Length: 138
Image (cartoon, rainbow, N blue to C red; front, top):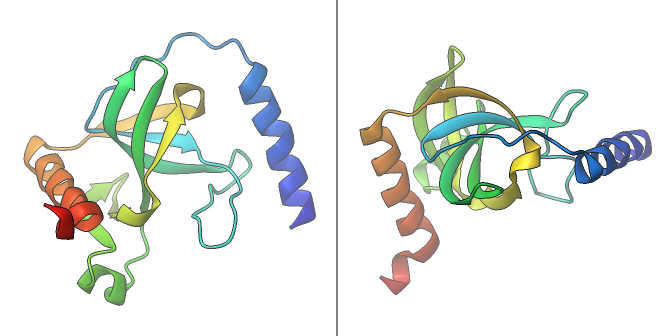
């Protein structure tokens, strides 16, 4: 774990100080993003760049967005209880949005665009996310 943390810290410092060309991203898009090595139950990125696919849920400006990470692992309990939401296929694999792991990220974390979600799928995801996060208040 210590070696992984050291690798992530080096990569993160490069991301912080890197002057990167402006990235054009929009809501509904699925991107590989450098999520990093996180704490406890938070989902980590994978591989040498600590990446994970994410859906751009809300673009705030050209440098930040609120995203929902994706997984290919379907935990039936989480699906039934609404913690994950099936969005269809991403890169040929069935993908699920991890609703409880949404977060705001800087665009420097975005690596490359994978695809755009169909409008109906995205609208269903947004409704499910709002219900999941704020259901008893709306």
